[in-house]
Length: 543
Image (cartoon, rainbow, N blue to C red; front, side, top):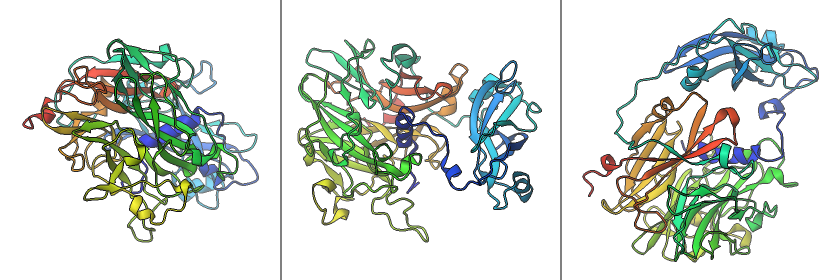
């Protein structure tokens, strides 16, 4: 949806925030308004009902005399702190409109939002079906205890009711295998796969498998199948507070192997204004002080270590606008990999609609930057200034560093978005069909495509992309999992039969790499999986 930040990019932001030293005690809804006297937490569970295609638990909860919407924690079998203690299931927020009777119970004359309607995912119902539902309201302010809501223990978690599957191709061609399991292989707590997997082969024949974090490590081996996670640091973010240096938090996302020793890496740099003095009014509304710039990095030892040139030599791509506190999210994010066809190297960068809440609707201010994917290319991979963006007709858009002087005509340095590419975290070239293939994960934002799941789109020229085709729904993936609370992110294709040392080309039988996250132990427990898939249904008739 234009003007709406993509969930993928926000996940990385919140993961970085969760891994930092700040602990949140108030939500932004809390800060909206509080009364001086803190009353008790109260509320009621109204029931559990099937609506549309899944179950929901309904009710209301508040802290008496406080306007803020409170959080709720859902437990199974017993209350938290009971004897025996209940099992934590999930959290929610009582932030929906409510009727006057609830306002009276909450002692809220302003009529704020205190109802909740929390979806109960089928994957959780597999685990907790038949167990009693207990819900605690979480106090916002004052020396007030959290409280068990009325109706706790009255209702039970129902059995899962999966919606019917839409038609999907026979895409899987083997079981999943763990390429990096953080519960067994992490070198430190923040050592997690936090970007789509990439691979390249160095001058010694060693395969480097990288699913980057802001402290980057690689899996090393003689093949994709034997690459094992290594604790040597490949790249470490400097967390530089000088925004014009573009050296705060950096994820190395796009790699190209030139000669086995020289490896180019394009990095997604996030400036976290809330972590630097006087750069953000809020320490909790992190998205509003989030600025994104893409950087150029180079390894000259085969990819074992990457260096960033001194500023401004590390600059690759950005908006022509400087950081503005409380006006984010702002910037471009490189999330796909580099693909070379003919003399051209291609990639894409996602841009948030900016300024915030801009658009073409009534009363909205126009967007200086449109929401969507910027297709980019260069003929010289070693010159970061040579990349050009799509202007709607050709690759002519140059990128201007706003910290190197006044940008006279900012609009000339902003891309025209390419449809269907902005959910991509992986791009490959399929030589047999002469098609670019982009791997997409629809988390629900692209509702016009169909259900949440894995999609592919193809293009003969990198700018005209087909409507994404559904390969596998999220529900189909979840039903194959053991009991647990899983979510998925960061999908890409890497083919062991690739003919190039950057693994940018694919056949009809590549590996699908993706990250499965354990939401019960978020954000640190994750597994990077690989699974053989079939793409003949996608490329059929194109060869």
